[in-house]
Image (tube, rainbow over the protein chains, first blue to last red):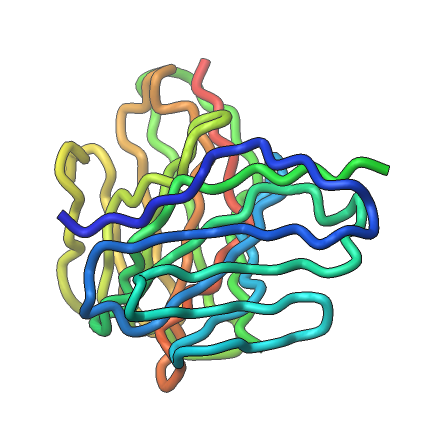
Length: 111
Length: 116
């Protein structure tokens, strides 16, 4: 069974610090990896995606992918209270856009 | 780019009636659209995958005769909840895949359904 696992949290981080969110996946055939943010009562929004080993940076966000260890992470630098949300990790196996979803990590940024 | 709209944003209906939810990709063509349901404080649950011009593929445990999905064009998919019951009250979210991208899905804003 193809799985994506995340720590449900909540993960509490002080404002201005680095928040580190982790995700592991079971299928070595996974090709693309996505991080979505979901505020309470809202639909998910795409933050960034990565498909090559290494780091990918976009503003305060950095996605890291290690295919050998089958994990992907999201770092949020200079965390702000507005970053408080549930972060969803999703994996694409390469066909039909269908994503395998993690259950999400709730992140709380404390002022 | 990659904007998905959903209508209505919220709806209240009486038990036994049917409700139709529309999902539109506004600035791209979506050969594949997805319908999710999310109960409070729970994870996204994929209900079905719809491809333009063909029958939807439903996830195990989702009643295809209750949740009717139509994907008649590359920009529009509809979900009809038939004979709604209070236990169908939930947050329904659609998403669409943009052709030529890396497989990401773009989500509509969701529809909150309350069945009384």
